[in-house]
Structures are given as C-alpha cells and as structure tokens.
Image 1 (cartoon, rainbow, N blue to C red):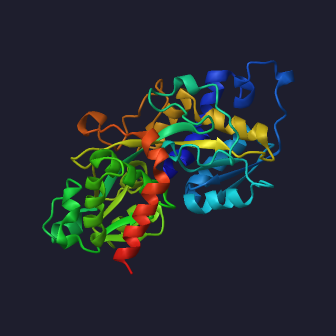
Image 2 (cartoon, rainbow, N blue to C red; image 1 turned 90 degrees about the vertical axis):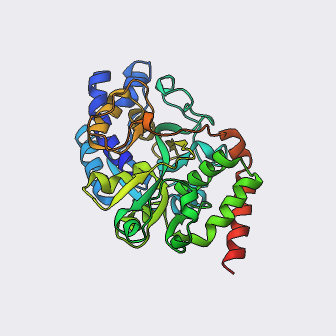
Length: 355
C-alpha cells in the first residue's frame, strides 16, 4: 500500500492534465465555472504510511503542478496516525489521511472524516465502491504470505497454505502484526474468517493452533521487512507491501497465496473532517481516483492492484495474475459488524497463551 500512494500521487497529477485540460483536479471535477470553484489554499498536510523516499518523489511532482502549495507529509504507522487524528479531532492539523483505511472498517471512523466521495466513484470496479460514504477506495490490499526462501529451504519446508503454518518447525518463526492496530493484520484475520467462517469455532480452532508459532510484529511494514532480513521464515502480510522489496530486486523471498483461498480489502484515502485546507485536500483525493493516473502509477508501482475499472495495468507488474489465485468471497458487512467481538476474542487468546 505504501508504495501505491507515493508513486500514485505524483503521477496522478500528470494524468489530470490529460484528462481535464488543466493542472487543478479540484477545478476539473467541480462541474462549475472556475469562478465558483473554492480557492486553493497555500498549504496541505497529509498523514501517510509511505516511506521517506516515496514521499520525496511525491512531493516533487506535486510542487511542479502546485508551486504555490506547501505540502507537509506526516509519516507513521496506521495505528499511530489514526490515534493522532482522533486526538486532534477538536482542532485538526491534517487534511488528508491515507494510512490503512480498509472497507472492513465499516463506520468506525465516521466522526473523523469528511463524508466526501470524488466524481470518479462510478468508475470504481464492482464490489469496491465506497461502503461508508467517506472512504475513497483506490487500491486493493490483497492478503498473502511472504516467505524467506533461504530459511524455508533450511527447514525443508514448502509453504503453500494456512495449514502449512501450523508445522511445529515454525514455532516462533511466523510473523504477524497486531490486528487491533495494524490494517494488514486485521486484513489477514478477515481472510482467515472468510475461509473458516466469521467468528466460527473452526476459525478460532485454527487461530488457537497457529498462535504458538506466531510472533507479533510492531507494524505492517516490519512484517515483510523482517522476512527479507532473514529474521523470520514467513509473515502474514499484504501483497502491495511485500511486493516493494521484490520490485527493488530482493531474491530471497516469494509471495504465497494460501491454497485455502485469498480475499482482498479495498484500501483508500479520506479527507479529515474540518481540516484546515479542504479545497487542496479534495483536489488531492480527486486526483488519486482517475483511471489515467492509476494507469501511469502502475508503471512505477508494480506491486499494486488498482480499483478504477478503466485503468490499464502495466506489463512491469510483479504480481501474479488474478487467474492464478484461488479467491474467496469476503463477507464485509458481517466482519464490520463483528470486528469488536473478533478482536476481543483474539486479544483474549493471545493474552492467555503469552501470560
């Protein structure tokens, strides 16, 4: 996800020139005369999980198109940033939030974000339109396993499934972030529930048998980075994050899509409620959703599946084709309704096994 947002934004701005005839996406999508368009502010603050390198590239392109706008990026983990926005709700400092917003969140953050959807909502692929009226879903976050092939070979394993993660040889060698604070970990927990049944005895039986092999990572990115560094054998993660080291030439990992099935969460971006720079924020979000921009972004961000049904995926994509993956339906509404109950059960099990 991180790589998506950083690569996407700079390139999206270029695409808006072609699609709209000018460099201001807010003006191009307003459907009104420029005189009626809101005045663009001189500052924009974006809360993001993107890397410093990605943010530097992103900022450079933004300033080419908006030379009078000073953009500030505030970096952090998804859980850390949502806590920050919550604490600032009475007097927001940020304008845009793009850090682990998933369609399995439901209305959990309804009070934190402006109920704003871009004019490109009807171009989003079926099944991934906004379900809450304030998340604009521009990418898919598909679960996968990231396997260190060298450590896997040393153990004589061939990891292909969730069942394989129960092998006693993997005790203390399977990494996953905390689903209560990590969007990717919650995404993985949702996938397990999608396979075995939401809050079912079968699902909890599997999780209870998996937990002795688990180590809790500090964040989503720490999961796949630790696998690359050889600290653990396998991590439960998401493909657009784990694809970053692959795109950068890592040759000691592979992505595994469990044979039991895989599902995806839609990830998105939102305008922070009562933000200080609403015109710039909406222009920013509008631009992220265009087909032209997502097509251009895929040339750079080769590890992300995008949502605009009119975009064209780059030949440089490092991900396997969708046809090669066993997909399962994700009961989003049920997962949203039971999220609190599921997390309470998870925390109780984890505490009992680690007390």
